[in-house]
Image (cartoon, rainbow, N blue to C red; front, side):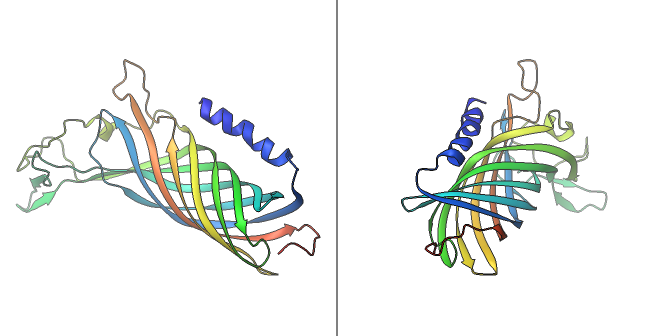
Length: 251
């Protein structure tokens, strides 16, 4: 929580510190991409990564060019599909199978999909062209989110016979709904931007989200001590200018 408060305090500093070349550029647009998620459970739950989509709206305000660094703040409102996908394995790291009603062997699977409204507030530093050409950039800042819903996909049947025993006995999460719908954490990312006069800005970015909050209760009397998200995001964004600084020297 202290990290989140520090970053929130940092954002106004980025906006107010006008000690370089002044800018008043405002751009808005939309983005879409792919999210790869897992959950940091304690006790540990064997997992792969669950894939989902992310899409939303973006607003960017560019306030200054300090030496060669272009300083901006960026806010987004996204809908993201996240969650986790379990690796149900035996002690030899092989898939666990059960025998169905037809006599066929089927591997056990379990995945939980959770839809979140996510709102990141990001400080941005860019290097390169602002109006025509390429620019590289990095993002860093806090993100908050709210769980809008969840669904489960599984073939687990209580009491069904399996060919081998599961290596993990941690199964409480399979029947537990989200207990804490509010989420918060830290985002860091990097990417490239192509700017074209009278057309707009095209960005391609990779970012990582580390959740500082848990979606299950985590007191000493609760089952899980941790249940936080780790998300890898690849997304494309298009922005068009609403306000542009009048300066013919800006390239």
